[in-house]
Image (cartoon, rainbow, N blue to C red; front, side, top):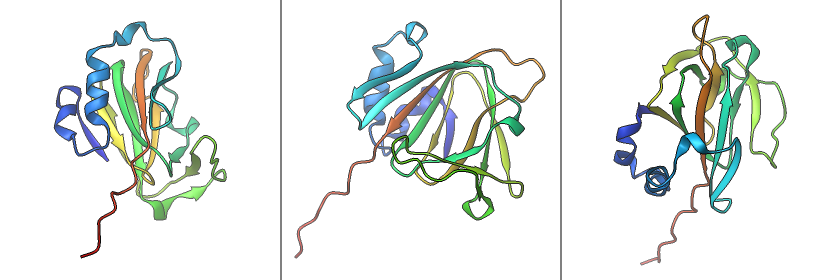
Length: 160
């Protein structure tokens, strides 16, 4: 997991396709995007445009992905997110391969942090996260972009 300021996103070029995300953001009026999925590089890179009011943490579930890395960028509003180690998770649903997610519950070893406007978080495959949680009594609506990155397979090397 990575949590940092949006202005520092380009510093994480080691995350697959971050350079492409930075270029997309530089050429896009984020506030005019309609909710839903927008393809960038086919199924290897797309963005989910989300507008919502955060819910109480008890209303949400932890989720993991097997195929995709999430780069979640907060453009308006803020929310609480939680993480938990794999060993503390209890299955809530089975894995949905078509949508690449599985939901979990956890009560122990849960860590919480606030993601504010102008910040981003990266969750790699297998990292449990619970986004979209309200942390104050009167949260304002959120505008968040979630870039979904399918990691490239490792390059094959020739045997010596």
